Image (cartoon, rainbow, N blue to C red; front, side, top):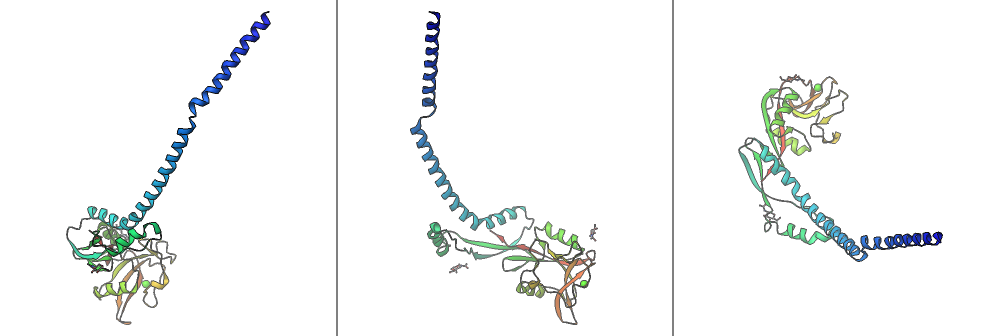
Amino acid sequence: MSYGWQYCVIQEKGKRKRRRKETNPHKSNPSFPKLLLSLFLVLLLLLTISFFTAFMIFFQKYSQLLKEKKTIKELTHTELECMKENLTMEGSPISLYTSLLDLLLLHPKDLGLLYWSCCPKAWKSFSSNCYFISTTRRNWTESERNCLEMKAHLLVIHTKDEQDFIFQNLDINSAYYIGLSDPKGTRDWQWVDQTPYSESVTFWHSGEPNNPDEGCVMLNFRYISRKWGWNDVACNGRHKSLCKMMKIHL
Ligand SMILES: *[C@@H]1O[C@H](CO)[C@@H](O)[C@H](O)[C@H]1NC(C)=O
Ligand SMILES: *[C@@H]1O[C@H](CO)[C@@H](O)[C@H](O)[C@H]1NC(C)=O
Ligand SMILES: [Ca+2]
């Protein structure tokens, strides 16, 4: 008798358990709303991707301008000399946005893409950069520090045209530090702004560089060759120097 009664109770418990097992997944897994949610998330993701792509294109075009606008706030240069310039846009490979880019390229004026390009007063303007001739004589480290204080670097030369422009503004009886040095003394030349050193864009005087103890580079004029050129010199010598910075865009 008692055996049969116990059996009934166990069956009842089992039923209850089974019922719970069946109802629980139904409550936490409403499959239709979940599908909707997934679709919504996929849509949201696609939208995010397209917005991101569009944003990236604009960001690439304007990041430089934004960066320069940021630096101007920190600048101590109070007087600027400016020129009106066109914002040049390079084509983007993303076809979706080419029509938008065409608009930007063909009608920049309509979109306000003319901008002012400026150099601080007393700086020289060439291409997209500004140049300052510092006539105070300092050693190389102090010369670079002086340029940094003006949000610039010692001169980094990228082309012969740039170098020729610089020479026109210098005094042939002076020497000027530039942003090239050999900090390890291993003839491993380094530009202060991390530009890779390229043998094809060097303007050493003949016979230079001539001494591993001379770790810094200056520009000077040699009467014998009647030419401006580079010479490696000891870094503690005090010379005039040349600073270079990107033009400021307004
Ligand atoms: C800007 O570029 C357009 C087309 O290239 C030209 O017509 C216009 O004169 C330029 N404006 C300035 C201020 O350089
Ligand atoms: C450069 O000059 C500064 C200040 O005159 C001095 O403290 C520093 O030691 C000098 N550095 C070199 C490498 O001569
Ligand atoms: Ca030398």
